[in-house]
Image 1 (cartoon, rainbow, N blue to C red):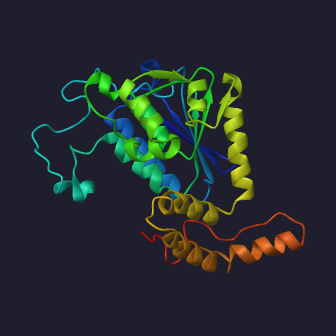
Image 2 (image 1 turned 60 degrees about the vertical axis):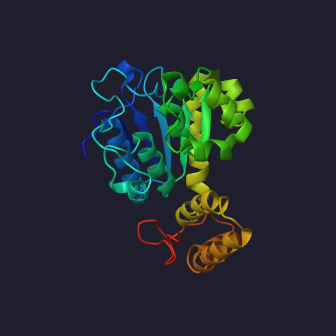
Image 3 (image 1 turned 90 degrees about the vertical axis):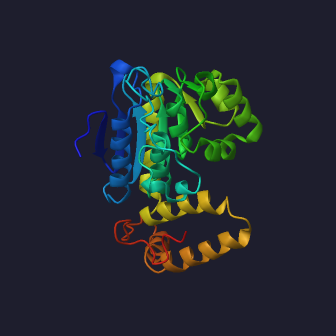
Length: 287
């Protein structure tokens, strides 16, 4: 796929995914959705990518849906009358699925850790997409808003699943029902971002964090632990986590685990042989 609305650049095992419509404050379109979904699916099995850093070109991260397009601005097919039963086969529901949800599910399924570097306005889909990212850093100039009620729709992008898990139900309700736009310090105080950076230090800090992950964590370990944390934390009983963890330790101990132990004993940097493209354990995916 040729990308028109994003840039995809890999350097030293770190993919920078740049949302690139700066003249429109990186406003969201169906084309951008298709390109970002493709990019995350591509990165997921690309052994040259260890970590993904997402940021926006220009002053904004993503200022929400481009409301200037004609027809249904959300790209939905109003001739359809979808039911909840039909949504059980949601992957087939073209023209019904919200585009932000398509993206966040692609991020959720990605085998690579994802860092969001929020450089400016992150409103609507710009806010919900970063809910699916694993680590969120914000520039002092960042502004975030779950403004859906203000334009008469509801939260999308699977954010009603992600956001309460990140910040708690009370904070999620406050931000969504008030439709307020809050600054980076409020995002930090609410637990939505882990750090607030000076604007010029945002990307260097994101790359520093990405480098720590890429250099220290085995690729298969990172892929497994990312999915284990999200899925096991939503399981009904800790025994469900025990089952998955037992299998994960059993298989990783036989290849990367042996190299990791040897490197520790020999006081050297580990060179893990397993790759996500062909080295995931046979029980993956377990869901």
